[in-house]
Image (cartoon, rainbow, N blue to C red; front, side, top):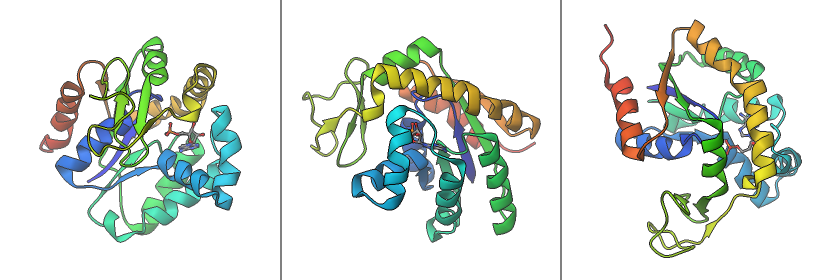
Length: 217
Ligand code: AMP
């Protein structure tokens, strides 16, 4: 099963992708995670991406397309994958289609998670991530048992550099301008399923399960 999770920053794509991984055993491919790891390691990819990421802007298309082209050839993608944060522009979607055709695959579902913009700002400013296992928390909506410490592995929780309020507003504008048109793009291909990304994580996940487990008619 090959999936794309679409939705603005803060919609909960990462959290839902982790839940899909647990239930369906598909690899999660997050271009944001791959880029952040490259920045942390100080590779040339990381250096190239950092300036854009710090400003809340999108990294150039050819950079992320290269990442995906390589990643999809890995053996763990044989039975499927979950794309979280890619594609994010029209050229990325077109290039992705060409890559899939080349490797003989196609997309099964595009799940679009919808959330009100002001809610997104609230969510993103309170978001905390574990530096060890990537677990996600929120200081108000999903606080860890002990402040600053991951419930799952005891790792240290940190705030992403691009989760400051001004950068968040830039990221949301980038989303509206560059990524939101993909909703129509995938609607035209009859692959889009929109769900409402508000409520508990499990409630949102139930909606995703309904989409993924529905038998084709
Ligand atoms: P995310 O973790 O998905 O919110 O991504 C964090 C940042 O990484 C974004 O604000 C962009 O700077 C960059 N990024 C991640 N995925 C992409 C993509 N598909 N295209 C361009 N930039 C991306």
